[in-house]
Length: 98
Image 1 (cartoon, rainbow, N blue to C red):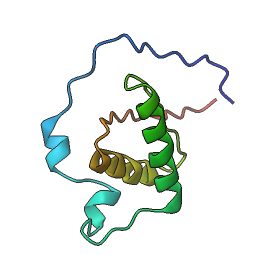
Image 2: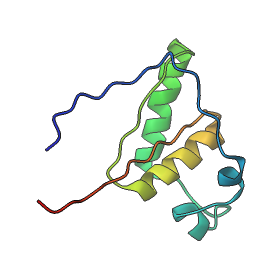
Image 3: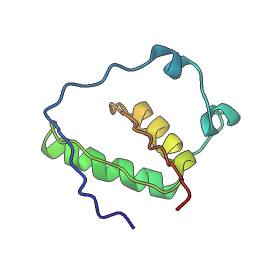
């Protein structure tokens, strides 16, 4: 269990993205035929909710969590196709012996 408080500085400047990461598809997206890929009901419900939030306030920022990294890749792809700006932050797990 983790009891460390999560803090996010929404005023911090955006990180520069790696252009090579955008041109080279890795993970789940690299294994799919994106021309034939169909979104899921869960992803479309998320798109609808985020679109509603954006319609109310265009400066609204949202954080999307999933325990499945591959699902986050699909969500990010669909969000980008809808016109959302997406930043993905990956965590590293370090396991040490007691």
